[in-house]
Amino acid sequence: MAENSKDVESASKQSLVFTYGTLKRGFYNYALMQDLISRNDALYLGGDFLTHHTFPLVCGPHGIPYLINLPGSGHRIKGELYSVTGPGLARIDDLEGTAIGHYERLPVRVVQDRGDVVSAEAYFAHRSFGEALWERNGRVGLSEYSEAEGRRYVKRRDRPDEGGSILDDVRVFVAASGGK
Image (tube, rainbow, N blue to C red; front, side):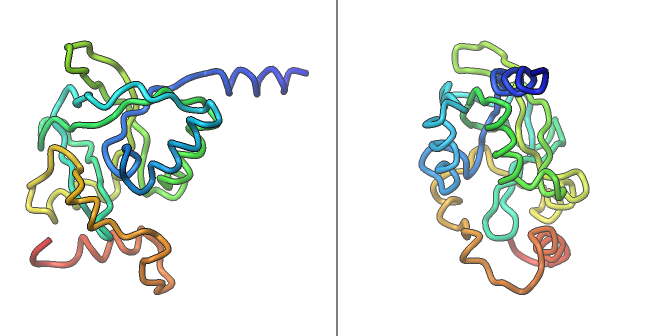
């Protein structure tokens, strides 16, 4: 009985999640958000949010967007806000590879256009490579992951299968010299 009540508590607990990349409406991984919404595991709260502080936002290998936890660098990032249940959050964590060190879900403060500051969470490039991605991109970032960047995104199924992981791809990308 206690286990069932724990499951109900987990399912009813909501987290606010700020999305800035492929999870946004109109982008490839939004299909996950649509599924979560259809199962009542997520609720769209709006797309007129900016990070309260500036952060770097860059594209890495395969056109994947990465928010980097270097507050004070980059731009205020535009994105969307969702209220997500515990089970929904677990599915997003899985997509974002938090268990393997691809992204990490960290607190972030966001502001709606009317000025209200909201505490949420966002998926940041893992600390093991985030700053190196910023350097690799010449410390030049985006203020928004737009349709232009979205067109460069390579779906998992379309990426070369060379036996490596996304973390291997990140390491190769960071080590490469020259243009983006």
